[in-house]
Length: 210
Image (cartoon, rainbow, N blue to C red):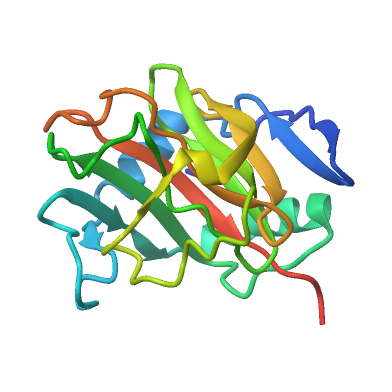
């Protein structure tokens, strides 16, 4: 099996009235998982949205793979967070690379804090330790999603409280309530500003059971 799990120890953290879950060494064969995923084509995310700088100033791409073997993983994580996903047999990724350009000013800005439908589960696939995901609270009543996703994705750091950085490491899973907390990828250096360096994680989206 490609998506076989380890004998897993789930670590829970109580965080502002909710739980964050951590699992180290999530997959038994992470290289096999990575290779399976990257046998499939990457597509630009929302490439038909206009206006957009995707494929020009940055490269936001996703996998969307149907795989019945993956249902066991979805069910396992659903049991932990108590929510469900309608995409049990689909594998989604986030991949990102940036062009060196003043537009991508990560020192003064955060990348698009946003909310989702419920819990998010992220499995990180970069083999060097790096900042993974930021969790925020807005200082002002800021709607960072009022513009098209790839038109004005950067928001001024002064308008957001950074509550926590979820650290990334290879084959680590982090699961948090993406409906409760504004969140977004953590970019604090130029690790992903090179053609041969791609930020990669797998993601599952959950929501409260109806």
